[in-house]
Amino acid sequence: MESSIEYLEADNYSSWRTDMKVLLMERNCWRIVTGTETKPEDENYKELRDFNSRKDKAYSTIYLNVSKSYRCVIDDIEDPVAAWKRLEEHFRPNSRARVIGLTDDFFSCRINPQEEIGIYAARIRSIVDQLKDAGKPISEWYQAFQLIRFLPPEFNGIVQYIYRWDDNEFKFDKILQELIAEESRLKQSIKDQNETCAFQSIERNISKTPRSKSKPSSYKKNIQPTKKNTKVMKSPNTFIAESNLSQDYERDAWILDTAATSHFCSKKSLLRNFRPVKNLTMSVAVGGVRCDIKGIGTVRMIFENNDDLGIKAERTNVYSPQQNGVAERYNYTAVDAIKVMLNSSGLSKGFWAEALLCHTYVWNRICHSNQSLTPFELYSGHKPSVKHLKAFGSTAYAGVPKQLRKKFDMRAKKGIMVGYALKTRGYRIWLPNERKIVETINVSFDEDNMLEPNGSGAALDPNKKIINVSSNSEFDTESEEESEHLSIPRTPKSQSSEQEGASNNSKTSEIVIWERKAVPRKDRSRTDIYYYIQGSKDRFHCYKDIEEYCKIHNLEYDKALFNFSGKDKYSGIVTMEEENQSD
Image (cartoon, rainbow, N blue to C red):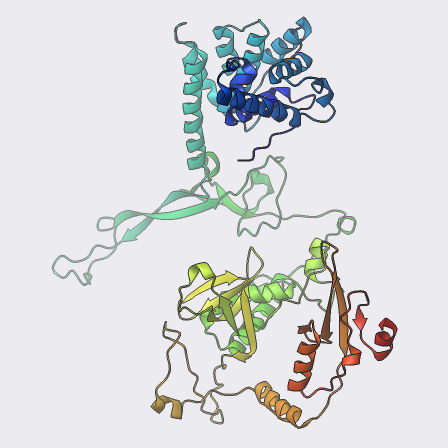
């Protein structure tokens, strides 16, 4: 198994030493480097050969994992034990300055934000081990103290509890176990508190008249809702507050355009037409904070320096959202587009959400009357591609991966294109037989074949019968009796294609434009030559393919027009002059 570690540099000896130790243990060479395994006697030839092989492997492993700038330190020796000691003396000199630096690192070691307790404890242990190797070990008491010294405020409770332990319990390992358990508890507590919504019941008084005991299904006619016969009930009315993120802000700051129906204000003096309310409380999700609502009013805002800030104020009449020139205008356009898309595709109204997503996707990638760039390009700065756009409701064949189909299963499933993938590249395909939508890029389209739209209801509409695929079997066929009465309507495009096919049969020749493309291979061994018909994706790589294509389509074939020699690097439109020059 190939294993690679980071090369030894000037500032990573500690981590490199640990990684190299594990790598040498994997290759059964670590005991040779530490000197615990000695060289066998000369009589044991096989053991001696194996020992020498592992010894050479240990040295080569150490040497090849040192950066080129430091390989000169050990390039004059071949013993892995000596090489290991020399690297340790070079990067960890046994000096008083190094010991003082490690001691300072130990007492200044702090836990990083969002760092787990286990990682923080491992960093402390690494410094302790280095001091121990240098002959200056740190006592257990200081290790335990440093572990709880710089903990976040969330651990204050467990720290106070640890301070009450006896000296024989105040150990590094035991404190670490308690801190890890407390960390897990805090994570679960934070997860429970950070729910998306918080619910709080609001109590309101509702008067209800009691029913007659003799006739449970009717009320007493003579009874009146007085105080004596009226029962006060408490009806819970749920108030929902959603908090997706929290941020510090000034007390006089306002957040505009939050799409909220109502906003909250902490200053009563700013409210106009203040109306006090009672028995109305709310609680938010962050921290479970609960507050009382004292009243309801309106706030009038005046913006200064609107022109400098680019703010344009438009006043509309009350209860007239149609005057909103941005949101309502687009909603009106989107609704019209949904109607047209559903009607032209023949899909039911239940696909209105898919039609809206598809319309918005295309709307953001086309230019509009008031802009020279698309909304996508205005937002991101990149010009979007529209080559992959397909007609909504067109017939699609979603490919089935080889791993998911059996021997006699079809390679594709017939479906309907209802949009574009939301998070990946691909399309959203509705599979009627399975009644589900899949997102895939392995799909082929037949835009000429679409579901017939519903009739307008007029008497002149022709009687059309459409075959709906409702069976899960892909080999179903209709009976002879049904086939006599059912007919699949033809689109004008398909009829015109048949007429074009008939006219093509009568033609003897037709002029086409050929394009030549030279494609060099990655290894530069040769250059492949392909020919294309302008406007078509079909490509030809030999004379025989071109001759057969021309024969089938009644085209004039001239072999002198084509040249498949890789020596000619020309790419472009093919003319007789170009071929003569290449010859």
